[in-house]
Amino acid sequence: MKKIIANLDALKIIEEGIKAGISVRLTVRGNSMSPVLKDGADIVTLHPVIPEKLKTGDVILFRYKESFLLHRIVEIRGYGQPDAKIVTKGDALEQKEVTCYSDVVALAELPKIGIIKLSGRRGRIFLSRVNKYIKRKLNLNHITSSNETNT
Image (tube, rainbow, N blue to C red; front, side, top):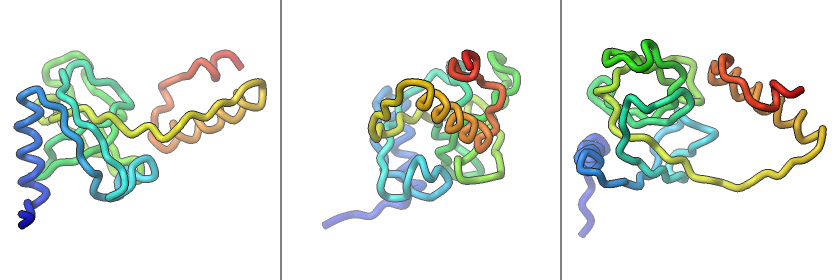
């Protein structure tokens, strides 16, 4: 007989496992990270993390208002400080959440879908446009890539 556990209870159990140093695989629920992560279709691996080593662009599992969220870091205010604020956002959302290091549960490893090989000038132009689109959607304009600095 299968036992159904509420999502919040399951995440509390997962949090305890991660605190014990265990990596955990989790099926994504919700659409806040689409199109990168799809509800019920994608599986992420959650790893223990040293919060002070987090950086912009990382996807984290964190406690937020009596629940858990899996969102991307878009800004760290007061980086390296114990009271730093971590600003996160779901890729498909406009609103942002502000949390702190103590609420971070795990660093998420996203599934690798495949490799796109592009070479030559057309490939650089295409990747540059994709990179600009992603930055605009995530508000990561302060990050530059080697393609943008070389063109």
